[in-house]
Length: 277
Ligand SMILES: NC(=O)C1=CN([C@@H]2O[C@H](COP(=O)(O)OP(=O)(O)OC[C@H]3O[C@@H](n4cnc5c(N)ncnc54)[C@H](OP(=O)(O)O)[C@@H]3O)[C@@H](O)[C@H]2O)C=CC1
Ligand SMILES: O=C(O)C(=O)[C@@H](O)[C@H](O)C(=O)CO
Image (cartoon, rainbow, N blue to C red; front, side, top):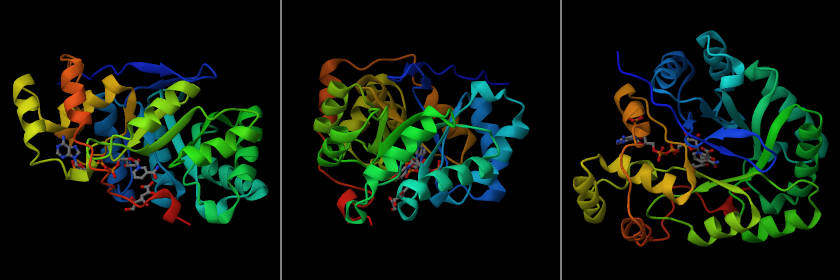
């Protein structure tokens, strides 16, 4: 049997410890969840990223509960959907997520998108602060927030977001956001860390992967780790799940990291945050 990889951790601003790589479950259907989670846990993943929008909180919670892995070893993230933004609706929505997950508490809850046209993310944040104070959520954060959304939030927030989960990969390294987060003590999580399969033909990545004798995905995930952008790769293949966290026995030098960051094309695989309502 292949040995599981032990994933290092980061410590959030409130002292909560979070794995430095998570497993994304967007588009994992309910009927595949149990097998997928079993393989992910066997590979070594302990952090799982879902959202009400993915429609799989219930099957994820059930798969984790039935896995036999102690709850305190797991780190489960969910999000507040755009249509649930607002104070009371967020309180209700998070309780519904916790009930669907069946896990008593959530480790990290994020505002999924700022949805600025709704004008509700400040009230949504106030509700998350209250749930955090009440111990229903161990850590709170945002997702897809740009600098102007963060600025507005920080003007009124009693608790600073512990995480901002944004789209990041070599075609969209988001260096200014990574630096902003670092200056504010906010951890950056990277969604679509592998650019949803768009990196395959890139000659710079291919050459660096060859030099280190790793796959292109492993190279890119190592780049994330060394930049401090916590990747959430999704895979439905047990081999790729294992390979995606087998990235702790090689290191990139500063020049190699810079070469990958310089591939920036400002190319998104998902929508621009200002366009999501
Ligand atoms: N906060 C937000 O707004 C968002 C959050 N997310 C989160 O981020 C997670 C990851 O993002 P996602 O959009 O899935 O994109 P990823 O960049 O993780 O890409 C996933 C794709 O890459 C393939 N893949 C995975 N590993 C490898 C590998 N080693 N070699 C080659 N191909 C590979 C997968 O195929 P296969 O399954 O066949 O291996 C799948 O098609 C989501 O699951 C979700 O949790 C995503 C979008 C938005
Ligand atoms: O997965 C998520 O969390 C999303 O919000 C995405 O589905 C996003 O809406 C997208 O990229 C759609 O292509």
